[in-house]
Amino acid sequence: MRLLVTGGAGFIGSNFVHYALEQHPDWEIVNLDKLTYAGNPANVADLDGHPRHRFVKGDICDREVVEQCVRGAEVIVNFAAESHIDRSIANASDFLMTDVYGVYVLLEAARKLATQRLVHISTVEVYGEAGESPPDEEGPLRPKSPYAASKAGGDRLAYSYFTTYKTPVVIVRCVNNYGPYQYPEKVIPLFVTNAMEGEPLPLYGTGRNTREWVAVLDHCRAIDLLVTAEGVEGEAFNVGSGVELSVWDIAQRVLEHLGQPRSLARLVEDRLGHVQRIALNWRKIRERLGWEPQIDIDAGLRDTMEWYRQHESWWRPLKSGEYRRFYEQQYAERLGQQEEKR
Image (cartoon, rainbow, N blue to C red; front, side, top):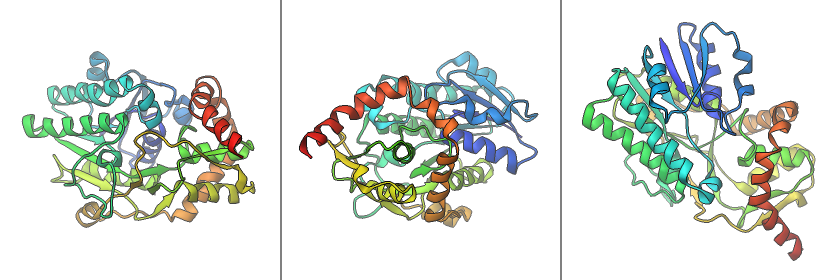
């Protein structure tokens, strides 16, 4: 089977590409990635020359490139997205283009070329606040950031192509992922790499906002099932773990593991529209497909922290240039304000 994987040089996408090639010797993958700041060629450098992997640099908003890549593919798995909430708050335009218009371009190509399935990777963020009862797949979508709203738009656009044109789409909404190859602006690699450098770990607000966490490899296993599962077209599936940790919990685990003082954890001015609790009811995928997470949170976080500790050559070049400008814009003033209060 031939798959088109979009965003396959990003965090979750590159993990899925490696997983799929290892688990399915009969799968071929065309990997389409624009290689923006978070799309890293190093994430798939070990696949150079792989007989079942072909990399194409291109944008999912480019109809010509997308059609060329979709032609001959039986399944599309769409990871391509602008994905950082803070960046969407600063400037939402790229998010609307990639997360909505780019999805439209993929859907049009899938419809035109009669693709057998399009697995669209959405996000838990489309639900907004979990409240006391984490939402199931029928829960209302109440996105709280421009990023979440753009993902909700792509999510519902995909569904509309199923109801209107019978385009065989499947939608995946997963909780926060952790694992290797995650760009260091995201909270776990940010905390790990900052701690290794003796730099502060910035925690928004009280640091008590909670997130449900799942290992990226477990997410890949769920997507793998949905690529071939029967009778799932037009449906959404939540993917979770049942394990919730606050940002403060994560910071303390990182500092303890790396032998750094607790004083490096610094509370800073809160993010606009900050979601207090992210969690999901994921009973449906467990009961319908038998999927459950396999990676224990304690072991998974330890392995993740060790991966970043052992792969400094991967992340150090990333924490310069564009990343450094964004980091200073996002945190320098906030951390400075905290220093003045100390």
